[in-house]
Structures are given as structure tokens and as C-alpha cells.
Image (tube, rainbow, N blue to C red; front, side, top):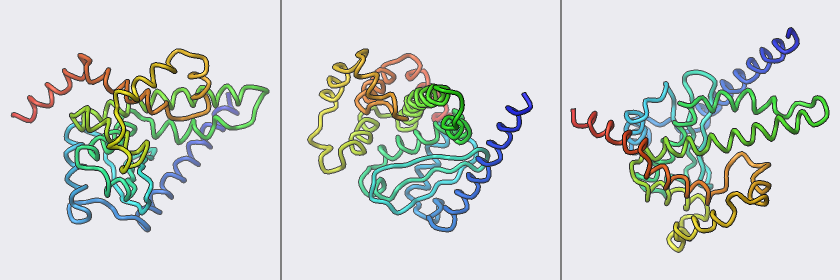
Length: 238
């Protein structure tokens, strides 16, 4: 137990140092979102925070044409980074989904687990132990994406915009208008519960995009989602 405690303490220390260093790097090389800096995003962050109530966090914009975003942090303030390509090609509702998705990762503790366990999963050990640990972490990470998508949908409030945001990140903004979500969901059914579908995701931290689209539709039709939206509507009317 002494060795395990020492390894865990070391992993936490290293993860904390790297998280704070990464945060400092963002402050030095990216634009911190506020009411004065990129006010459009500052407003969207405030709206999403009112709905989801995440812990203290900072938002940043980094120059990158790739349509992507990420969240990280072990403690407050956590950080959400949006690439500039997203801001150029997504409308406000689509950005609400992306921001809400990343806030979901923070709210559910995914960023903390990812910072610590994500590094430990690849540490060499007994035969097959590292492989099993990595596969287990990847499986958890895929489930975490579904949870974050649900947070994004609650922040956005529109299934069509949540799905269109994912499609734009999947094929790019120019081709997105030529893609039908219903057809993508049919693609998901050809893979679901098949050995090849399972193997195809085994080494990935993200589930198949077609799975995410289908699961979002299921959640939007669920009792939990409808109750969440009713609560938000009541709070907004008070």
C-alpha cells in the first residue's frame, strides 16, 4: 500500500503542476474570454453557466483552423479552450452545445480523472495489466463523451443545433449542409452490437460520431431531458 500511495501522490502532483503550467501557457498565448474580450463568447459562456452551474472556470480562444475544443484542470479555475475555427463556422446555438459539452466534462469530474488516470493507464507493469488498464480507461472516456453531450444539449436546448455542431466538426462546415443526420444514424445501426463495431472503437477515447448523434436523439426524447428543461424554464420565468 505504501508504494501505491506514493505513486498516486506523485501522479497527482505531476498532474497538478502540468495543469497549472498549461493554464499559464494559455494566459500567455491565447485570448481569455470575458465581457471585454470576445464579448460574443463571454455572453454565451455566461448563459451556459447559468444553465449548468459549473465550478469556477476560464474560457480561452486559441488560433487553430480545426473545429475543436477541450477542457482541462484538476482544481479551480478549470479551463475551456475553443479553437478559432469553431467561432468562425458555428452559430450561437451550436457554440452553446460545444461550450456546454466542455462544461459537462468539468462538472462530472472528467478533467480530473483524465489528468490523473489517463497518465497512469499507460504505465508499464505486469504483462497485460497495462493493456487492460488502458482499454478500461478508453471505455470510460467514451462513456464520458456521451455524458458531456447531454450537458451540451441542456445548455443548447435544441437537438438540431447540437447535432449540426457535431456534423460540422465531423465533415467540416462546407460539407455539413449536404449531410443528413437521419442517414448518419442509420449508419450507426449497421455497427451497433457487432464485434467489428466494438473493435473499431477499442483504442479510441471518443465513441463513433454516428453513435453520438443517435444517443443525443434518444436523450432528447427522454424523461430526464424533459424534466431538466422544465426546471430551467421555471427558473427563467421567476
